[in-house]
Amino acid sequence: MNLHDATGRRGISPHWDEVLANDLHSPGTVDAVLLDRMVHLTPETERHLYARFTPTTVRYERGSRPFLESIASEVVRLLKETGT
Image 1 (cartoon, rainbow, N blue to C red):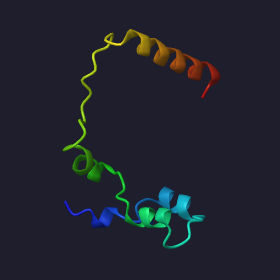
Image 2 (cartoon, rainbow, N blue to C red; image 1 turned 90 degrees about the vertical axis):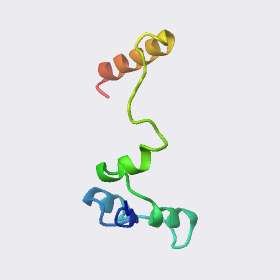
Image 3 (cartoon, one colour; image 1 turned 135 degrees about the vertical axis):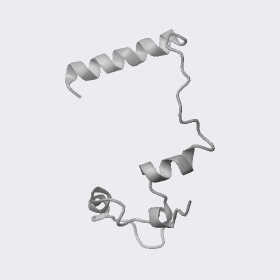
Image 4 (cartoon, helix red, strand yellow; image 1 turned 180 degrees about the vertical axis):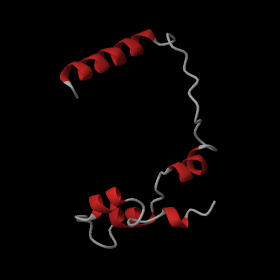
Protein backbone atom coordinates (compact mmCIF):
# COMPACT_ATOMS: atom_id res chain seq x y z
CA MET A 1 0.00 0.00 0.00
CA ASN A 2 1.29 3.45 -0.89
CA LEU A 3 0.81 5.64 2.19
CA HIS A 4 1.92 8.87 0.51
CA ASP A 5 -1.66 10.10 0.07
CA ALA A 6 -2.37 9.50 3.77
CA THR A 7 0.52 11.59 5.10
CA GLY A 8 0.88 15.23 6.00
CA ARG A 9 -1.14 17.91 7.64
CA ARG A 10 -3.84 18.93 5.20
CA GLY A 11 -6.55 17.40 3.09
CA ILE A 12 -7.24 14.26 5.11
CA SER A 13 -10.48 15.53 6.62
CA PRO A 14 -12.20 18.90 7.11
CA HIS A 15 -12.09 18.35 10.88
CA TRP A 16 -8.31 17.84 10.87
CA ASP A 17 -7.82 20.89 8.64
CA GLU A 18 -9.85 22.92 11.15
CA VAL A 19 -7.77 21.65 14.07
CA LEU A 20 -4.57 22.68 12.31
CA ALA A 21 -5.85 26.08 11.16
CA ASN A 22 -4.33 27.65 14.29
CA ASP A 23 -1.22 25.46 14.43
CA LEU A 24 1.48 27.29 16.39
CA HIS A 25 4.41 24.99 15.55
CA SER A 26 7.29 26.83 13.91
CA PRO A 27 8.37 25.35 10.57
CA GLY A 28 11.23 22.90 10.94
CA THR A 29 10.62 22.11 14.61
CA VAL A 30 10.30 18.49 15.67
CA ASP A 31 6.55 18.82 16.16
CA ALA A 32 6.04 20.46 12.76
CA VAL A 33 8.09 17.79 10.99
CA LEU A 34 6.16 15.02 12.75
CA LEU A 35 2.87 16.60 11.67
CA ASP A 36 4.14 16.91 8.09
CA ARG A 37 5.20 13.26 7.92
CA MET A 38 2.59 11.47 10.01
CA VAL A 39 0.39 8.81 8.49
CA HIS A 40 -3.25 9.41 9.29
CA LEU A 41 -5.20 6.55 10.81
CA THR A 42 -8.19 5.98 8.56
CA PRO A 43 -10.22 2.87 7.75
CA GLU A 44 -8.05 2.51 4.63
CA THR A 45 -4.70 2.73 6.48
CA GLU A 46 -5.71 0.89 9.66
CA ARG A 47 -5.17 -2.63 8.35
CA HIS A 48 -1.79 -1.75 6.84
CA LEU A 49 -0.56 0.09 9.95
CA TYR A 50 -1.72 -2.32 12.63
CA ALA A 51 -2.55 -5.78 11.34
CA ARG A 52 1.03 -7.01 11.10
CA PHE A 53 2.25 -5.79 14.51
CA THR A 54 -0.83 -5.29 16.65
CA PRO A 55 -3.63 -7.82 17.02
CA THR A 56 -6.87 -6.35 15.71
CA THR A 57 -9.12 -8.82 17.51
CA VAL A 58 -9.75 -8.93 21.24
CA ARG A 59 -9.14 -12.27 22.93
CA TYR A 60 -9.92 -11.08 26.45
CA GLU A 61 -12.02 -13.44 28.54
CA ARG A 62 -14.59 -11.68 30.68
CA GLY A 63 -14.04 -12.52 34.34
CA SER A 64 -10.33 -13.25 33.99
CA ARG A 65 -9.34 -10.01 35.79
CA PRO A 66 -12.10 -9.31 38.33
CA PHE A 67 -10.32 -6.49 40.18
CA LEU A 68 -9.58 -4.56 37.00
CA GLU A 69 -13.11 -5.19 35.71
CA SER A 70 -14.61 -3.85 38.95
CA ILE A 71 -12.60 -0.63 38.61
CA ALA A 72 -13.59 -0.25 34.96
CA SER A 73 -17.25 -0.85 35.80
CA GLU A 74 -17.14 1.77 38.54
CA VAL A 75 -15.55 4.33 36.19
CA VAL A 76 -18.24 3.67 33.56
CA ARG A 77 -20.95 3.96 36.21
CA LEU A 78 -19.59 7.31 37.44
CA LEU A 79 -19.28 8.66 33.91
CA LYS A 80 -22.88 7.71 33.15
CA GLU A 81 -24.00 9.21 36.44
CA THR A 82 -22.32 12.54 35.72
CA GLY A 83 -23.34 12.57 32.07
CA THR A 84 -19.76 12.63 30.84
